[in-house]
Picture 1 (cartoon, each protein chain N blue to C red):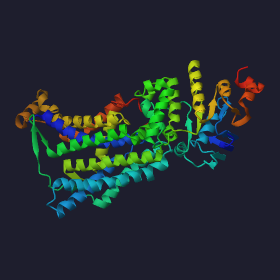
Picture 2 (tube, chains in turn cyan, red; picture 1 turned 180 degrees about the vertical axis):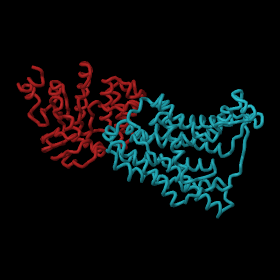
Picture 3 (cartoon, each protein chain N blue to C red; picture 1 turned 30 degrees about the horizontal axis):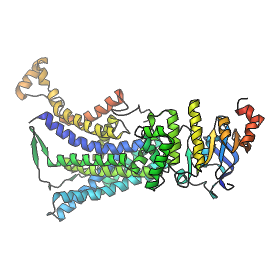
Picture 4 (cartoon, helix red, strand yellow; picture 1 turned 90 degrees about the horizontal axis):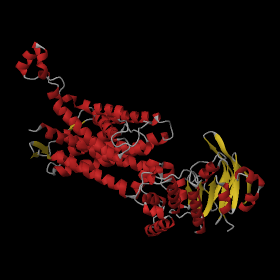
Length: 330
Length: 238
């Protein structure tokens, strides 16, 4: 099996999900310069709601085709997440729109904790396992394996990103969103209702998050009330990598981060195998002769790579890959 | 010709803890071109911002077409025909020229008429037609001012508030912008023009107001103001 190609496929799959979630961060940042740290929890709520519906349907109607069951889960998760996103903006962020920037930022962290614990109350601390309804389909390309679920995740992500881009760049509402992002006062002089545009931005971000939640849950086969925290931070890192506020940057950043993470996880064991340096001591030679490997960092260090990327970007290129100017305000 | 399109009574505006406008009376009749002149910091821009709803007055009344607009948000006023070309032009630099113009027509939903108006604006400013696909940020200062005026015209305003259209432009471009302002006025748009260039502004206006530290100190026919020794000394550089 080709490790490089295999990890590339895995990375692109996870990266598509990061990209979709990163869009939610970057759109909100672009329009009100707020890092909505509760966005990861919206993804989690999407996964939890969808899994509840999927579990119930799979139990009650075992004959239904799996696609229908998953779509029913998505259909339930999207409106719930949109409601959560709307309420976040309306109740938590809008009253603070003219407050110093730290206030909404801290509020966002607070809302993240609130949502996480609401989920804990509703779904308990036990993870929900994805029922075995989707038959494992594996296709081979160039010595690597790609599953049906991976193909579906990439396709759905691409379609959503294309749809969103078309909306932003081809419609009147999209133009209003871009105008508001650039200069809300002047946009209001054009007749744009700023409050409405901001609310719509949150609704779109939340809908994307809901679908991302279902995708990531289906991919890893599990949903848990804490899953939004790490995923949210990674997607945020992806948005920063691409240049926060920049839509194309969020997509590029998401895919890149997924690939870096997967390749890192795939090769870190091999690269930190102390047996490559067994000349250092006799004890090593002995040990390597017995076990063959002495791995310092295993693939469980996967998460490190995402945050390593975040740190490197913040140090060397704070404006991100496609960002236009250095963010001096965040 | 004698109906008051806009009427401000005892208008007061505080801005960042400063009383920038301290109770002014101002009226603009239908079909008029009115100039509001004064030194930097006299409160002209603040007055315009209050008139179009961007700033909330701390006192006084504003009536537009006979109705109070004190509590009307700016995005509603555009639909009622009150538009502002802001100081510094406010071009959306990342939107194309054509998208900027389309934003001007945001409050309208008559697609066919919008297309006609777009062609009219391109006719008025051929330079914009050449650059319709370029992003607004790549235009020169003069072109951006044309775009700002064209964009405001796209909303089919009854009353257009213009804030310093000549600011930062070369003399030749200033001339061209003023010709355009006159052309817009000829089409039946009522205009309230804030300008540093008092001479040019008064030459094309019917009436004028002079503002000084938040108060209107003179209000008269534009010709009379041009001949007023006080005005000549303070604003016309004589």
